[in-house]
View (cartoon, chains in turn cyan, purple):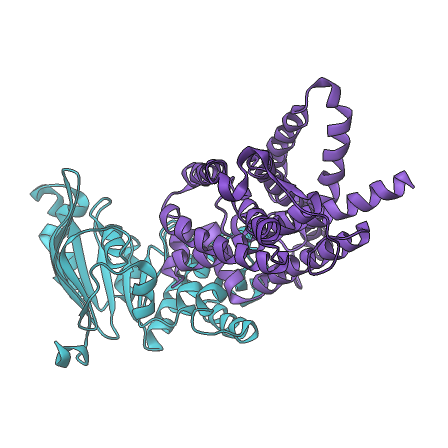
Length: 249
Length: 311
């Protein structure tokens, strides 16, 4: 395992299974994410994509199987410990701190590593510049549009200086031009060396960004590989269109 | 002269209650979990110094330190057990703790004299925290208030304050950003309990009497909540603002409604609390901030706001 930690694999999910009562949300799921890539995770509604993120972040406990980050198991760790190891996430349903200004929202995460308020503010401003939100820094987060709130989620996650970033539908609900903007933002973050896991419904963004694409259905992996190939896969088309052979005409 | 004396008492009570409400604020105002049993720590402070002073003639200053230690210990144990509870369940647990301590005070008759209560001997002097003139008490209470506000100001403007406020707003989001919520909450609880306990010692030295029913009264817990919430929970100045308004009102109401039943002012308290929660959830400070924000917004015609302080 020691030699593995320096390898290109940053995250490995092995035999992950989670049941909620009688419902099997995630069923024997295994995959690995390579350092520096953008790993797309798609699937129809209810496939279990967000549950995978919640499991990685220790928000749903306990579970069967295991999750390894840089070679070490993360089973039983709490969210803040997982963040400390180098993983950050955004929430599909945005969770801004309403009473705080935009820059203060980012400072919360930055302040885990930086004691000085002044320096934390500078670092946070830089993160806001990356996502293109610096001009709203002193506004209350409640005054932001949905697109801006999603950017704020990203800036906050970036503020924790994580190596792996889990993005949960950061493009959902955005206008086409905002999506284009966001694609550029994600690409720039990735270029700075951050590995990205992306849950997304907007295919344009998925195809433009992902180096690997994984498709979930009913908590199971049904396809994985190059985005173009995966999207031509019969099982994937059936999963999305829900049909039999006639849909493939 | 009577008026003058009354006004001096008022200053003492305003400062003391502002300090107590400020101590409550450091826990509930910042982490957003409502403690309805903070009187527990007031009682620990009052009894620690009260017992040591009356029975062993130990200076209440030392008694205050003992009270702080005991309170911090109780806060950590209670916090560990109850911070997993959310919303009304946490509040109910805190009420329970105050009730348990009230009964403990009744049971430990050897030390507390039970329901007869402890009477503080009149031995004026700074070391004894007993004063001939009301000015002495004003001095102590103002110093106490300054300590509470200084601690709050320091926390508010440091990373601890940022983390506490993030937990109050969304604990899950805060934890995913690396904030250790339980540890932060325990720290806040310990500091809050210590300061409340200090206030308890000052209270008993001023009133010169303590018995389980009065010191562990639910009304005192509520008073801390109302003062802080009306002024603005989670702010530095809020509890003082609340005390300036409510403490004189309490006295006036108690006097005016005396003939109609001694607890009637509590009904009015309850009404105030409901109105504050419904229409002024961020308190007077929040109202002021919103107004200022709107005014600036209007004058700048929707352009970015220059600066919005977090004082």
